[in-house]
Amino acid sequence: MDTAERDLLEETLRKTMTGAAGPRLDAALADLGWPEMLAEEPGVAIPLVFRLLGETGAHACVLNDVLLHSAGLPPGGAPALPYAGGGWVEWSRGEVSYGSALDPELPLRQVPVGTSAPVAAGRGALGWWLLGTGRAMLALARRHVLDREQFGRPLASFQALRHRLAETYTALEGAEATLVAARDDTGALLAKAAAGRAALTAARHCQQALGGVGFTAEHELHRHVRRALVLDGLLGSSRELTREAGALLLREGRAPHLVDL
Image 1 (cartoon, rainbow, N blue to C red):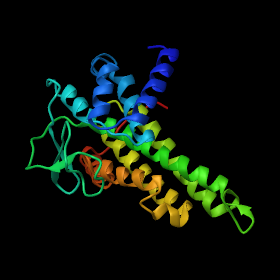
Image 2: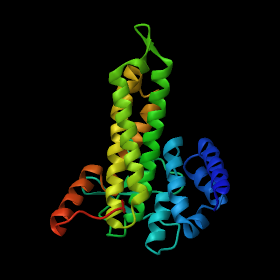
Image 3: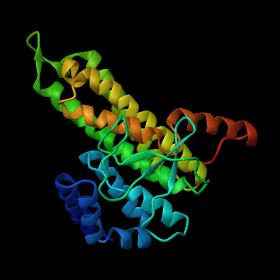
């Protein structure tokens, strides 16, 4: 896939995700060739689709597809997913009437203890989703501080806000670099942890940049904050994965090699 084809695909996917979510988006992605892209070019399809899910605020059951594909299982199932704190959830397919307590839009439900399965590909995919969610929050906060004034000055002129948004931008850029560099299970673990931490940083700083409006359920930021909290918990939270990486470092006695500098 060359650059022009990728740009056209991104534009098409963004328009599709802006107008659909859930089962409707699942069907639209199937029509666009998502199963074929996942099988033939996962290195392109996964970062693109999951990042755009985060940026647009849409959702689909594509995480199931990634996990089943990485395990060599046929598509169409809904595997049990480990969740932060030792729980297990299922990302259900089709129309459902339940959702996460944090994010009612997502068709998640608690299930009994599941079985261990390869999760590296899923962690990488969730990392891209969290990255897109963080970028969406940063875009909302940036637009707010550029448009609004306080004490006769643009909010963007206040150093405290500039520092918070700069810290958010740096965290997101670092997470993206880690996602790009991830090549194995350890890389995926670190990338998911970095992306989760960056998205939570974005939620905290962008909510403060928006002031009181950022704490209301009516503002668009609220939706992205909820999504970041839920996605961070899937397949291990940033805090749990950081501890796991520390245990690995102690056990191996060396830092994992991620990228040639």
